Length: 494
Image 1: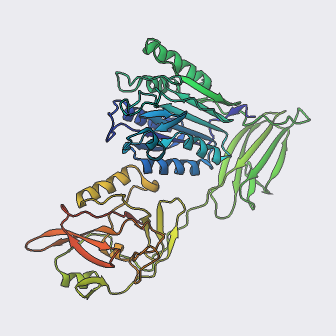
Image 2: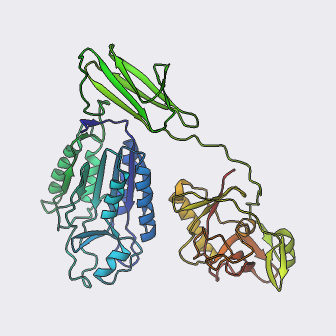
Image 3: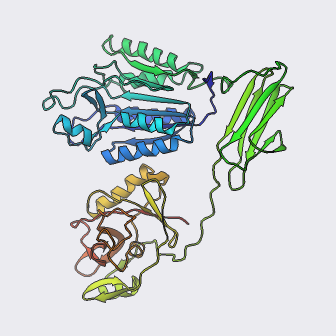
């Protein structure tokens, strides 16, 4: 049982705001709510994953990414602002691309709020989770939905979790007349007040919302926490309620780590491998360092009081290894190629029955990065998008797709680009694979044709080159008319 979760714990938040719905009424303040919440959480020492105007696949992907990263954090927070609805006692968060014609579509075209709770529960080791749902606006499907009820349904909070709703179960919430919705405006105001326990924050939010809504909206929480959490505290206090030392004139410090050969240092003195238990007879501030080969140094300060027992759990991060120069460095800057003859030379192709094919095929060294998002080719020094775009698009929209990936920091990078013909060609294989394409099955098989960034231009026409993984060939098409998929790429070495 934790007495207080300290301010220097690792905090991770996922913020999602949806407003620009393709088939539903747009919402006024949700993007402002999400952007302001992201900024506030960063100021409160949260690492933040943030998405706005998100479709179904992207919502599910970022929730899974959040769950995976939560395993290395102490506190998790999920905030959603957008359309939400309950059906048969289940709460659904509505993606911006949702095409929902009847209630039963919700299960397949919306995100169950329970998915967030499941990811938090699977993280296991974090001390506390917070779920904030400003998603209780009226049913966006009033004509076609007869069974759906107003607002969101009550969800039971697992141990160590607080679930906050913008309004009480089965009730609606208000968008507000200012920059933010009524609920989030009050939340932003009070979560930054120093020294308020989390329960006190939401109590003040409830009072503020009731006042602003003339008692028409009553925020509500499901709470199952036993510790004290502060968004802002004056100072770090004791991490956990541990057994008291038998001798009140001594203090005990237990140090553990998640790496077996880690060593501990206290005030600059090496004490050897851990786990290790220290006994102190002098109060004061102690500097603890934990080191291990190939890992970043873990450092923490502890203000030790006699008669108390303390615990340090060091979660070590691996040091980033220096990028290795690729075996096959490829051109990354786009060029203009104006004829088949020129393409044969510049792209190193052969003309096989009027089909331009690679002169030779590369031996890729592919590694799935395990996040269901990217593939690294160590042979070429490139990181590829595993799936690519879900739909075909003209070249202008392909560029917009790349810009959106960078704006959202897809897979934590913001330097994605459309690959050159040489880079895209490096993925071609001489024989069809199990999925019927000339590309390693490790990649998503939907993207059969992909745009390249190289231009085609002659006296009559202008277009862009592309690579066909269905027919193992290269060609060009008109960039403003023809439509292909996009598979983004970035370079390991700049």
